[in-house]
Length: 504
Ligand SMILES: NC(=O)NC(NC(N)=O)C(=O)[O-]
Ligand SMILES: [Zn+2]
Ligand SMILES: [Zn+2]
Image (tube, rainbow, N blue to C red; front, side, top):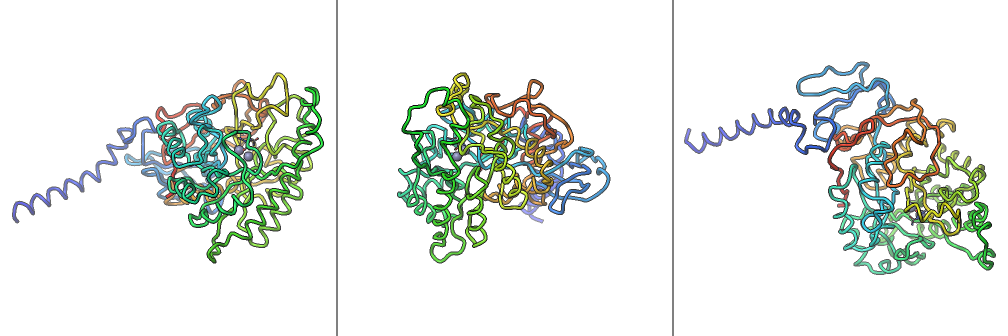
């Protein structure tokens, strides 16, 4: 054997030994990225009597290695601890896919006093959310160009406790400029979002049907969705008269200013446009996603019909439309102000039915906080207060507690919060517990009672929320993002190791 061959054999043996021994040391030395995880292991098993797998809820052990789910074994006992693999036995707690929220406003850069990457993603982790998709407003600049998109991604680096993707913004300034839209999508925007009414932010204008059509043509090429705030304003009699504060404080006044017909009108246009989206003869045309549906009457019927006739349309609703009703909102309590508005009890109950019957595809928080002053809580002025509800951290216990009363099964809840939103965002490796997927997991106790209040730590930047005082079932024990234990019982990992998710 000549010397170079000998050297080659020696190197091969050294590499072989290293690949066997490295995982062992790597494990013992708390993983390569110190601080990312509260668990000093990269190879471990999670066990519980209730694991939500693609085959249903069952006793199972989930093996995680290097951030991925590497095996799922149905068994009635926790696996034995070995030197190489650590085991956590969660007993009767539920192990299920981490939640994916496709509609959050983290407002960074530019409006960190409203929310931020650190506070928002810490709240997400504490609530069992492992992926967020950030809206292109109300950050400054709004995410409507490649430059703004790059700024957003830069601002997010090192500040995320869960993974975060980004929708780009479709506004009149870029809608008819194919190059600008192409650049935004090539920079990594997972899709686009637009408003058909004023957004509340000056640099995020409203789009019309022509803008939307043009954008869909490009989105179809990339197979990415267009998300739309579907309300079209119609002038009302109210606008002609100057209202005094006592009238502006009334919830009924606010409700009257945004009737269901605004949603109907927008949805009709979107359905008409979607008929036109099979560009270049491709059946896999663009996809329209209607955000935060409130009207469960005509708007919902229109969506159902369109879906039945094959339109590529999906729709989300939010916890606040399912939990609250106009009847219970006190005059002046602007914590409840959002757009479209929370409507009456009958509307709410129809939303639940649609959710259960599968006509609403997914849930999202529409977490859209502002600085407390803008909620005008003292004046209680519903017409001038900021529209947006703060809720990200409570999504799971809220929808589980109220969902149970409406006969919603845990498997359904998980589809609504994880599987379908992951699909909308093009994240095939997230949203389900299957071998090969990212180990994005929430472990929680659905029977534990909590109350949103003093003894409950809220990680949002501001604690103002209409959920204060609510008694709920369900507390998050542990959250894993790509195998990193990012949250456990009130503690977060010391380093923010969530990553920006960019479309490729
Ligand atoms: N500019 C906003 O964040 N608006 C949001 N506000 C709500 N929903 O009240 C929204 O999603 O439309
Ligand atoms: Zn909206
Ligand atoms: Zn929103």
